[in-house]
Image (cartoon, rainbow, N blue to C red; front, side, top):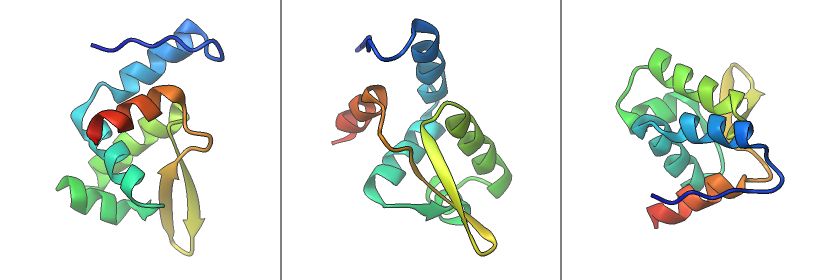
Length: 97
């Protein structure tokens, strides 16, 4: 287990981020978004082989913890990794490679 403490984040903020990432579906979303610039919920749901509703719930948790951000393009919401990417998220992404 890799535990990193970042001076720019409080311990509580780090705990919330680790909890948000402590789910295989949400880790898969981060992995997918790290390989694409941005993607609509339907593409993310297809990649995860998960329902639109369940995917949206996972994305909401990631958004609430500043891991992803979204932009509305016409009728679709397109998600991407938040900029700047947190050191904790960067570490997770590096483990995928």
